[in-house]
Image (cartoon, rainbow, N blue to C red; front, side, top):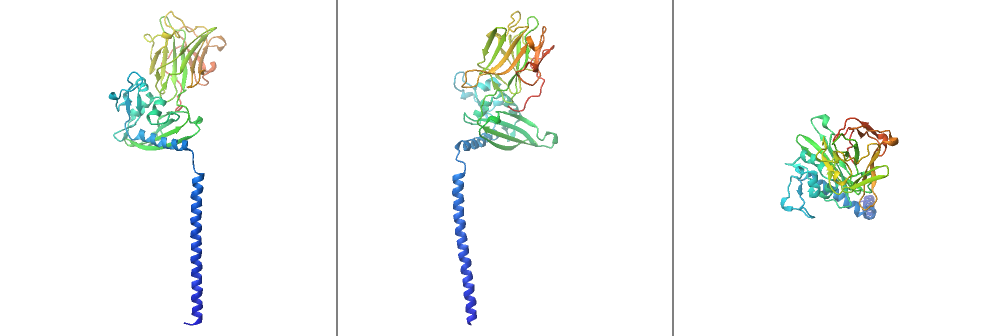
Length: 368
């Protein structure tokens, strides 16, 4: 082999050595860079255990909704539960029974979404729903169920249920979704879990009867503007006229979601109409019946108030006022009706000749 050949061979070996050294250095660089990035990600990643808990809670809660039919354990009449009479048929229970027991609102039957269970969510309070899907006491939920795919294009996007707590006041939140089958359609179930209050503050005064015909009761109509049921615990009525006032703090009762309740001076003579529930306030001396006139015919005020947990002073959420400078003067058997707008302004009310207990004539909201 000539000298030139050895020279070329040495050049090739030197080039190969340089390539190997470069690749080795580059590999080492990548290893160092990977280690650095892993360390940086570890240090800069989420260390907020609260956020992790919310993420885990929404996944677990959605699984409970979509993996079973759910269950209900009734109250034993005291502070415990009657486990011997527990049942999967939670959707057949009334709102009053569900509130006193313990419910997990599974929505499935035979691996399909059960519309009767979806409809029955209106009898479950937000607190009961949140507890049933396993949320901690400081967490609450918002639920949306809608048609995702259907042979009928008009049904796509249709909301089957939408309600829960107000996400706008939440500090942290997490969302999870799942698609399930209902017949030939696909339904999207979206659960939001966040840390706002479980209390539902969506009750609205909608109609007041202060001058009933002879023998009839005075009554107040209230609408629950949330898809979930609302417990009446903590709510109160205050009536006033001139220098006199009267107040009743409600200790029990529940109004179904997007439903109307009548509070009356006499259950036996009250027309229920389309109201889902009726409550007797005559026993507390707040509303009268027959010759007992407890709401002033000429001028008066009814306020609907709520005392939030941990607070002492109630907050007024709605007010109906008639007479005086309001211009709302009622004749015999006339009512004042809320027409939408501010729940605190007399300009949102009007005198109506025909009483409509149990009926509301405005578009309900879909959520909280």
